[in-house]
Image (cartoon, rainbow, N blue to C red):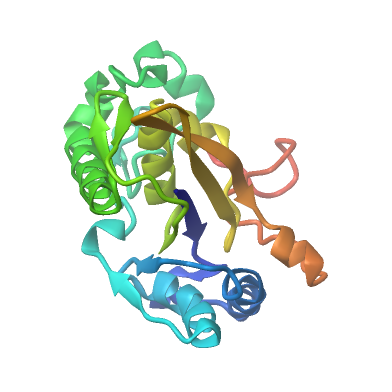
Length: 243
């Protein structure tokens, strides 16, 4: 089985839509995804994700199943570096603050962090990952511990149009690591595609392995540069600081 986890295009957050750049990105994405042999498409209920999916679905002559659990993880937390000021997402921390607590690097303990507990982030994470596992079980792969029991082996492709934070959460569950590692340690530019495959190296059990994270080759193929959303400045003084 292969899963494609796609972030929405360049966002117009105010109107929950895409910018003009994002709409061009969605068209480039459609040229890449629509020709694929896809068993099912799934989409977040938020407008920017649905607008990203629309060109692909139209080109492929397909429809997507909408799931509420694919919406972004917009869970306010009290940022310790800003005297408890609320952040709208649980990964909006500075590295020198969150890295003081090594529990956040642990797949088993990250949700014990007091800030995460205050926002009940672990509960939200458990909900979306449970929903993912329930979906995968429908396609023949049942979660059993840290692996998946293979009930119906297949090479189906499932495509998810969703969001940066939610996508990282799904990937971290499949890869058995803390979501904070992916939230803070990777960049998934708008319209990027992350691909994970099952590997069944012994009969009856499979693990997921990432083939790519945040791939934007469809943009480069069209002569477009990736949007800056999801990144911060490379050097402190060049205009896009996170403090």
